[in-house]
Length: 168
Image (cartoon, rainbow, N blue to C red; front, side):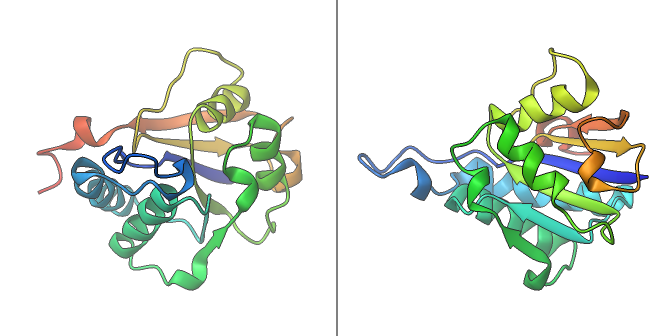
């Protein structure tokens, strides 16, 4: 069985006019929410062995902050350019090409693709990950390349807003 954690990047800033989307940083709320989610993942004991993220500034920063909370080395972070400005097929391909030695992986990405991946794996259409939203899936396979056809189960889904005040 594999475990896949899907995390949408934290809230980004729109303050700098004309800044290319790729370079948008987190805003104040994003910097506050990302550590909350990292602490929650740590407390739930669903610790990833690998973090795969889009290299866009807001996703990279979200992944780095979460990894700090998990006390993970930056060597455990793999930036994947195909996760930026791409669709569900690209997300499925990235996950299907993971090494099978990784049992638990955290994927940090963008909407709508991250929510589309969640819905595709669960064979539903009504789930949505807001900024810094987390979904934890258990997938009934030992092979990442079977991700699209294996049965997936939603273990938990939460947001920093739901967690505030619970983690002290």
